[in-house]
Length: 454
Image (tube, rainbow, N blue to C red; front, side, top):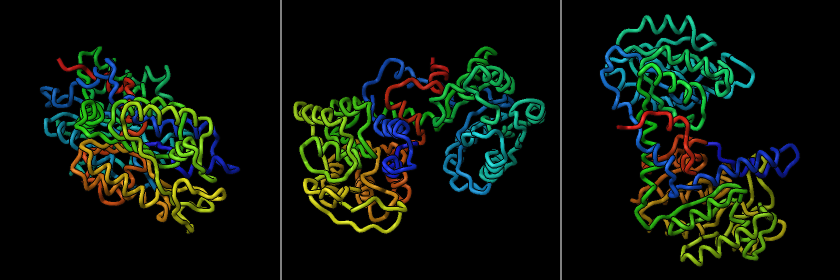
């Protein structure tokens, strides 16, 4: 999940940092995960009733194209995190078990400089073969479809698996150039399954375009097990939360689309604010925040939100103490001298970089009393071990509660994984930008394109 980290935000304030425009777009995403979690529109609700891989019938001998998310990290051609491969296995194994001929496709990387072996899916084919216990035939053709793919599919037996080359090698598949690609992909298969939630917000040939061609030939379009899990948790599971409902919002700064906070205040019982964005709220209260990160253009909005919380009788928790330093650590994980002060006593020449221990305890107590918790965004500069204590405290609180706990990805997910708490939460979203848009209430092309249940 491309959540803007504190590092990028602070970098924007230094020569050579990222541009303010890119920064604003990134921080908007960090907050937008809560955009319309409970304000479900009709188009959104329609996405909650799609055919799944279990609805595909008479699969023996059928050719099924599966769009996966194999966008795994590679270092010198070696996969460093196989989470996305493992997540795709249940759907693939289901189809194999039913005797289908399984044709897999996925993108990997952004492919900015054209097709190259550094972004080939060849390593994925090797790892998949190991995981499935059977050979996965890899079509290395940079065109993705064509003679090589046709021959590989024609040679398939029941239960065989073929992996096509990186779909991004084909070029801009979201443009009109993708129409021909959609047709060629559909020509390989009888039915289609989308199990790439992380790409479902893209109206690309391998995500949405292919479904139209499959429908035209009388085939079925369904979602896979991973997609269905995301739909269930991010849609159904949070539509009617068991109360008390606590939402935790962290990350770098307050961004433009702050209606997300307004909507959240109407739905949750307690809203917790941490991370860099907390300092704009604190300054709006008239507190001195020193050299901490502040979005001065949003001070009035923060005042309005605090007034709204009071009128609605909702709790809006802000830091009561802060871990401060004279400067942002450089490198980000390098040594840094810190001290803890009251959040209304930050010296002018110091900046807040994490919540303090009293705040961590306060937030932890709120989580303990909850029945549903949604968390997105770190409480501090999580990349530095000295400044990660607040984020770790929140992660531990979520791991220890019996509430339904949903992690929005990004640094929050990283914290849960690194601390070994991932198996102690209800759901960690794999969707990145798709998760954000889905929770905003936007219609995702890759989900909407699947056939509705009858």
